Amino acid sequence: MLSLASTTDPSWVQRVERRLDHLLLDHAHCEKKAASMAINLIFRYQTRPFLLRWLSELAREELEHFELMLTELDRRQIPFTVLDPSPYAGELMKHVRRGEPDRLVDTLLVCSLIEARSCERMKLLSEHLTDEDLRELYKGLLASEARHHRGYVHLTAELVGREAAVERLRELAEIEAAVIARAPRDQVRMHT
Amino acid sequence: MLSLASTTDPSWVQRVERRLDHLLLDHAHCEKKAASMAINLIFRYQTRPFLLRWLSELAREELEHFELMLTELDRRQIPFTVLDPSPYAGELMKHVRRGEPDRLVDTLLVCSLIEARSCERMKLLSEHLTDEDLRELYKGLLASEARHHRGYVHLTAELVGREAAVERLRELAEIEAAVIARAPRDQVRMHT
Image 1 (tube, rainbow over the protein chains, first blue to last red):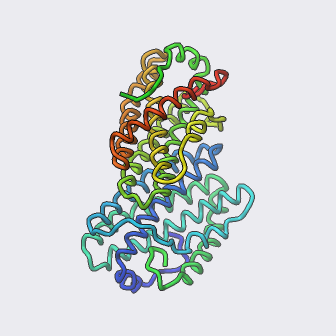
Image 2 (image 1 turned 180 degrees about the vertical axis):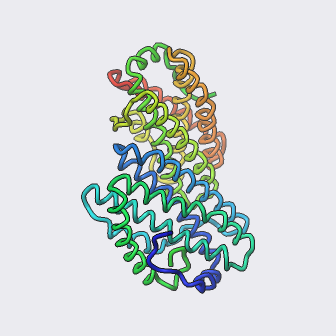
Image 3 (image 1 turned 30 degrees about the vertical axis):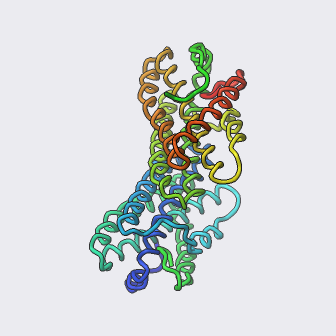
């Protein structure tokens, strides 16, 4: 359903739980970056009206989740600080083809895969974290991530048709699985 | 209350009403830019936590208004197209001092003045436009713009104290009045 080409082992939760502060902080930064990405796409593709409203609604929802994570950090007295991001998103973006509409297609599908991986990992967090409050928090976020994943794929299908969108999604999902498999294990992030 | 150093003549409404399509389109772009500005500030000043939540909430509200304007454009069959912005915001930003915290202070205050001028002009639109639906739309937006203006001033006061904030606001308001006075009259925009 999430189009991912690999599955995260549930032991990932035990690994990231050791630096829960970094995981939560990274998650807050991820929500901020997701909002910013949507707004960048609104600016870059303002002549494609079918994208604008959906991206604007998405950006609002990502910002709401950013605020939710700020509250969670506050509650746990974890200061909001700058954190080196994992190379994950940057590595994926390297595979975006040049020239339009390929560039837009690939950007939307990379975004859809980031949302899918976040969803998959949040599901694990919602099931296996020791902290009950956090399990509930992640349970509450799951559905949005899945919806964002589907939304990005749907936009791509409107652009190039369902079949072409799904075919490229499969190729990029293989790349995503390879990128996440070689993510640095010494960092605790949502996508390592 | 809005800290502006000049007042727009109500005849401005008759001038912009001749190219209502440009006014509405420019307004949509302004909301988008306001959201983007808030998100840029979140990224630039992420080590100043007191800014983050307010700017995130602001960005969400600007995006809601962007979507409202997209609906209004749709309803009037005005296509959402690229529009050369008026030089207004760019001219104001030239007066932002370098070095921190001056740069942040001036940026927040310039944003507060842009919100104030938008509020002043939307009030005129809500009173003098021929189109009743649009008068209502602008009446509905007024309060937010005034609140955004005050919010930006309040953030500045948290940073450097009330007195210093108000003093610099007065200086920048004089500059803003000069910039809007020489805005090109041949374009129809929210800030010309």
